[in-house]
Structure formats: structure tokens, C-alpha cells
Amino acid sequence: MTKLRTVLVGFALLCALAISGAGFVAAQEAPAPDHPAHIHEGTCGPELNPTPKEPLANVVPRQPAEGEEEGEPLGVLTAPTVLYSETDVPLNLDDILAAPHAINVHESQENAQNYIACGNIGGIEVDDQLSIGLFPENDSGYTGVAILERNDDQTTVKVYLVEPAEAEAATPTT
Image 1 (tube, one colour):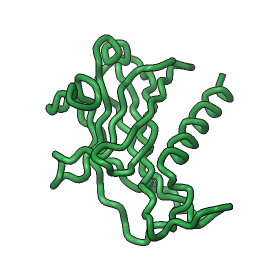
Image 2 (tube, helix red, strand yellow):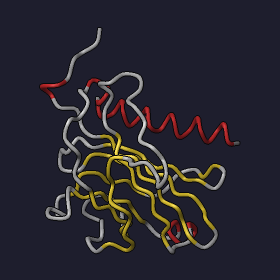
Image 3 (cartoon, one colour):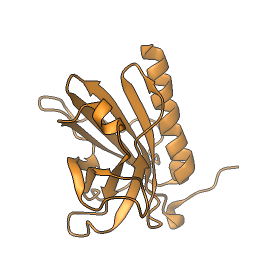
């Protein structure tokens, strides 16, 4: 089942890249801003409760863990930047699924009223994990995937957010 989970996560990330068109982006030079993220009651759109139910760690460029060295760039250097967040929330996944909830990502702390990506929490659970798509809000171009994993009475939430393609940096392929 671990192989199936890996395939599903990989497929979800590829879908997010395809949706965003980010496969044609030049690598980002400047550091990306932190994007606050939350679990909200309701569903994406006008039904979303604007008051967060549970905060998630800010979505940022992935950093090495303590004691790890940062690796060298590998592969295609024009690949898009994928931002990341991981949070253990004190909510059981069954409780989250018992009512409509969504994961919402904000532009920045200063501009938190501007939502850039949102995904409704629901779908098929595989090996104690639920993968959901994150779709652009307010024409932001940000897409991604969130994975919610059972962790005893908590839920581990991992958010992968793909930065949007910049039109002037895009190079079409044939």
C-alpha cells in the first residue's frame, strides 16, 4: 500500500503542476513570502467561515531539518518552486470529516484577507491518508495538494503549494 500512496501523491502533485501550467517557469531567484494557512469550517467560496478553526504552519520554501545540509539543485533548473508546510493539529480526522471543512492559504500575514488557494477536505482515504487538491483563489495561480494523515487523536497536515507561472518567464514546449 505504500507504493500506492506514493503513486497517488505523485499523481496529485503532477496534476497540480499541470493545472497551474507551472512546468514552464524559470526558477525563482528571490525567497518566497510566507503564506499563512488554516483549516476553516465550511467549503471554499462564499460558504467558507472566515474565522479559522485551526492554524497550520506557514507555507514556505522547504528548508532542511535541523542537522541536515541543504542539497544542490537537481534536474531541470527551471522547475517551479514548491512551497511546503507540515502541522500536527489537535483534531481527529474523523472529526474534521464529520462536517464540511476546507484548507485555505492566504497571500501573506499582512494581506491575510486575500485568499490564494483553497481545497475542500474530502475524498478517498488510502492507508490512513486523505489527499485533496488546492485550487487558485482570486486569480492567484497558486495550486497544490494537501495530505491529511491520521496520527492517533491528531491529524498531520502537509501542504504542497506550487507557485504560479509568470507569463514573461514561460517558455512553451513543442
